[in-house]
Amino acid sequence: MKLNTIQRKKFRVTGKLKKVASSDRLRLSISRSAKNISAQIIDDVKNITLVSCSSVEKDIRSMDKVNKTEISKIVAEKLAKKAQEKKISKIFFDRGIYKYHGRVKVFAETLRKNGMEF
Image (cartoon, rainbow, N blue to C red; front, side):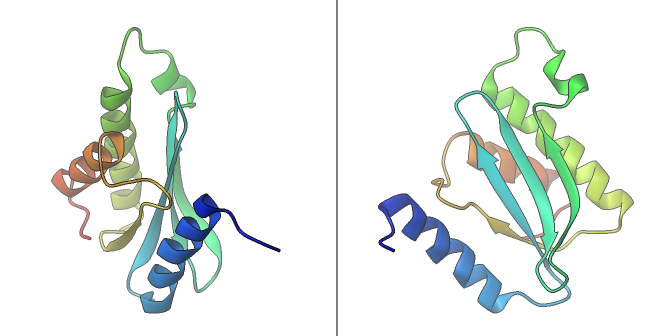
């Protein structure tokens, strides 16, 4: 099966992170679409999702006239709060196929401000 460019990018970035993954750091995977953004913290050793957050959730979706960059800040703050409740502070940031630019960059910076280390 021949992979297209997007699939190769995703496998390359995620594969490198999985190689260096250890039990003390978890992987934060981010995905975005034209309107929404979502993220989840994954334990690759056990293959389970520990914490997840998305802009599709009711409390975030109900906000009026908020642009996409501000939504990514809100989702990052909420994810950081959920992670701190489960005592997660050290992660790998898996940007997937997305460039570290725009909403992805704002998301990462907001996580750092809220106590996540990567």
